Amino acid sequence: MSETKSIAITLPDSVWGGAMALAERRNLSLDALVQDAILKYERAAIWLDLRAYGAQQSETTGYREEDVVRLCRETRAEIAAEDRSGVKAP
Image (tube, rainbow, N blue to C red; front, top):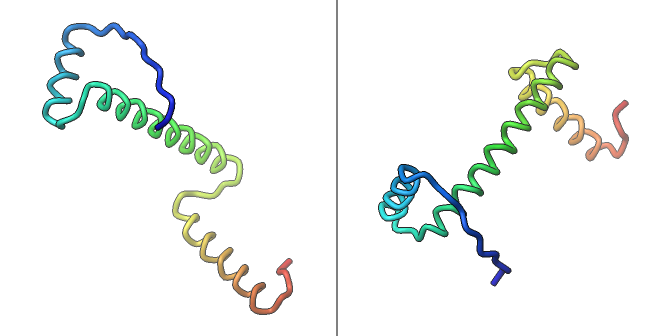
């Protein structure tokens, strides 16, 4: 089992009541609910960072979202051709 830390948090009554009700509806402990919420928040933050990076790259390169599928297919075709021929494309 992984190491755990015990913490104390302070929540407004409305948040506490909502969290308890949600944990009960989902048949989770409050600990499990909070852990799940933090992990989901962390994943959402990663996606926001990736979207910001993609927007910046789009501005820099001029590529748009609809170009991505085409570029992926072209790159995969080039890699497959290199694998078949043993010669790296320029």
